[in-house]
Image 1 (cartoon, rainbow, N blue to C red):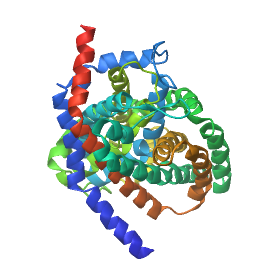
Image 2: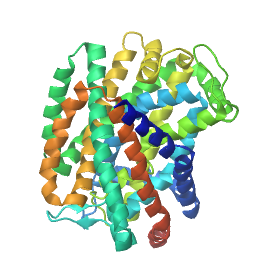
Image 3: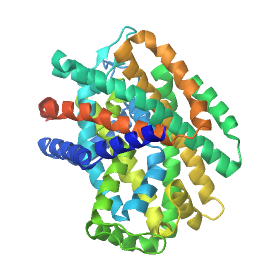
Image 4: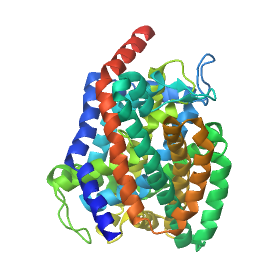
Length: 448
């Protein structure tokens, strides 16, 4: 087992190394330039479409509202990356890592826009009359039979990775948070998650969408308010925090307090890696959820979809990072979620750590729901609609296994498979960037 762990670890270091980070950032930058920086120029329009997305067009095809589709996507992305991921990036890369997370998010908006546009444009109607899409269908219908193997590869890697990073790891995080904060036994947390997940997932995308659009806005807003309070308590430190972030992004960060110091490359590496982990721009997952959304134009779906990256990283992750830096918690010895909890506890004694634990548990649980849909679509693509019910049952069964077991290897393997997911998606984005540009031009020309 140790040998297998070492092999996967070495592969992980390669696939998430410099070439992959360049590929993800480079693809996003290329799409942003080819689109004439439209994703940045149209944030206001996208925000208005997001609010209107609760009431889809009457003639639109799809199974859930565009708003519910975005909330399903956010359910999967707003998770441990926003709490533990940001803290880890700062611990390993210094405050400058937050700057590179922002850069990843800015170009990631173009990536996620393109993923969504292509997913909706090339989606299909399955045997049940449901809309289904994502990178595997984009490759199949957009690139043709010669590339069919690449679509199957994405679906296989996605379907397997989901059980790790989207299920077992998240269940483990929930159980740990509840045990550490409230002394709730892990088996009890597992039982509750099984019951709740079973109720939602067995209802399919309609029920997942209903739960997501009801729960995700509340959990995001609650966390944002709490983080704003923490930052507000330390408002006098905010200017210095931004100065530290920008300076460390280009000069590195010397050792201070319990922080061991970090070079510029560490800031770039961990900022980009954790940014991608948080918002998933480049993995192609958002398109799977958005393809189920009611839409009569893929560009409108794309504009709504790209707001997921804006909300996830530029708002939620930024507030977490500012809380950690403004309170000075980053110079201590805490790491991961414990670092975020320490920052919140500094400003909200007696409540901060509890609020972070509850937020982490809720975020992780919604990730289980969002990734359930992603994985279901992957296995449907590979095996057909008959595989849906067996998959849902297996997904529910995997939760207690994740909650009760040690998952270092599972986490490492799933993280590696995530990189293998990204490769087919990035290839399709680059090869079909002309389609994205043409659809975008046609949409905005018709609006004038």
